[in-house]
Image (tube, rainbow, N blue to C red):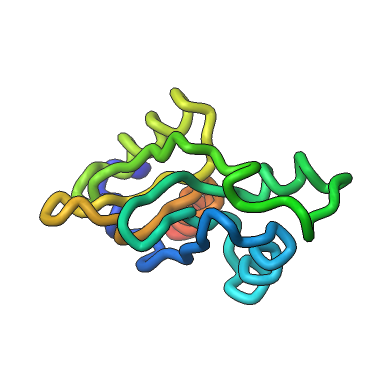
Length: 132
């Protein structure tokens, strides 16, 4: 079903970055404004980690004005090439129990986009409708 697609076919181009010291309350607003479920934590020179909506939910009972990005970020960024088969992206997500996969350019090693499990399921639904 997904064999004819590459990661680049469904990835969301561009990423939203936040800094290590950004308050989680501000990050929540930024995620809502951009209708996204994850952000990359960086310092303009390097990527330090990611924060997903699930990471934020784990801390919902805490004061989001005092928590900073570096307090809850996941420093393990798993990335894939835009030229990789979409089926490979699914395998990586399953193997690592993640819902967001960052897309890293092979040319300059920069993160150029993101795909989520939601994006993949949405594509699967479209393919199913076309086949019906």
